Length: 319
Image (cartoon, rainbow, N blue to C red; front, side):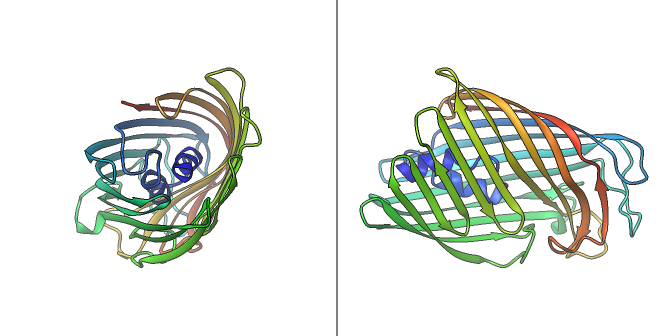
């Protein structure tokens, strides 16, 4: 129960593959709850040699329980995400235009089986299309899969054996990657997942919390939160954002269009992530780039975007 609550609350900013791990390990192990999430962001931007443009982001995700009992649970999931730009952006080497709209549309299933205290297994599968022209052909299809097996270690700790697959991952695409992590929870105020992924949650009192996480290769997130009233909290942190897309009609089928940035942000949230939560934030986006390549550091053909302020919102509702 402790690991599920901590991971679900501490992983909201991670990319799709990591957030799906969080859903697998969310509260009430063995039971999924209906959930809807809406996100949006607006950024000013400029690229080298182009007129000033704007970037906007929007995402809607759903989770619908299918079956629930004390030991196992199935749920259906769906997600629609759009990244758009209003100006003319072109990659430096090829001169290829960056699509004004990039979409990620997917649907899938989650499964979780509880075998005992801190013992269980589960997985998810999501199929969709991440492209400027979703489902244009089989070459724009996206497949993501995750699996875990948890066994207890001592009175409060556990081992997690993990596996992940994605054909849009920023490295080793189309390769199933296993990993091992150790869940270390010596007290109610500190929990850490040591391994890949790396994740730390520290709650020294009932007003303050700090979460930090890392997922290869460049995804680093840090967030501190302080409760100011019963339902209101202020937060600040650093968030890495990465998306991979499969542009329609690309000459090299191994190429993907990478969109990456980092964001320093601060904001206010009201409500509870266990019921209804509204979050507003503003900050500074930097290290922004869009490039075409086969992996995360293959960025010769790219356009660099200037650092810029942004505003964002997030709404979560559980029914």
